[in-house]
Length: 459
Ligand SMILES: [Cu+2]
Image 1: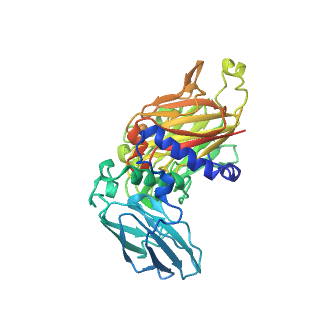
Image 2 (image 1 turned 30 degrees about the horizontal axis):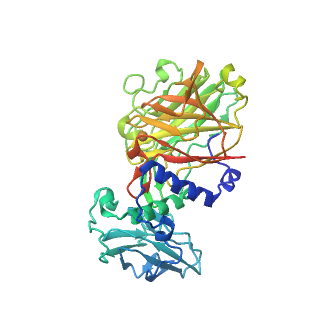
Image 3 (image 1 turned 135 degrees about the vertical axis):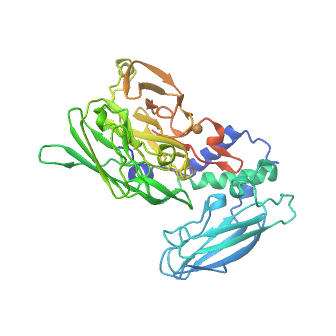
């Protein structure tokens, strides 16, 4: 119900996208003085005289050399893969990841400008960095006036006074061009139940810690249900007998609460009141009859201020939200696409949409006249005003309760625990930015990050 199909991905027009995203940067940040130099020219298609540095990658998990020095203006990294496995290179401090390099091939990858300092690089392929495939990038001041603060806040992210306007533009463009960046793992897909002999829909939910790639090269120990963030969506119908089997493979105890779902008190998942905590290695069964419609969440209720932001949350929906007559009259007759967007801002996952941070967030597509239903679910510790640039939104339900009168919205404020259901109709074709409007949840001096994605409307 949530995932983007291959067809969706294929319609992402990359160049239009990069251009629109670059325009968005200007719109949001208000960078107007670029010294007469365009972002594209300072990013350079031909390297602009930057040095070329060759790094050889091999299947024994080595970069040779594993320490390189480049000027602050940047360099072209020639990545030569002498192995047969796929390798590439990521610089987590800058959120930069090279294209993938197939075995027995090479690519040229232009990077920079950067602030002077020392930064780690690694191979982002699963398991390669932990096997030792890491190195050190030393950036030395070339006298271009860039200040030299390797210990800048947030692990080397530059502040605006450390860059010229054109350097800032180039960094922003580089991030925008990565979108939608490919990362390992996709959460929130619908989970199929096992149907028991009496018709009960059984879902097995395994709580466990896994490696999760939040943005390119940023891999954290996420606390998950079934190994993904968000957890798989559970969707049932009114009258269904539901059985959830929670298996705890975490190092800590846990319990599972059905937030916004009507269940008997003993199934409410609030240890130590309604049940004992489910200890590591233990199992707990929750059973109830579904009563909808509902837009809810299943999440931890044990040390929840850590377990939930670390990844233990997933949508739980019952039936479908009715479309109000007033909107049917306006042409919102049929929902073409449904999206659950789970907001987070804390724990190991941090500021994110559906467990990913821009540029690794998922783009969504819609044709003109089609209607998309979005359930916003806030599982973080902060409020988030979610803003879709194309102003066609109508709130049709609050916390899973259909509204008698839909409310127009282009920015909807979602507090922790709240769910809002919004219908959007594709109107003007284009790439429409979609982001949290607390601006430091969406932007950094070196480009968009965190709670940003896009809706691509096609004719
Ligand atoms: Cu926010």
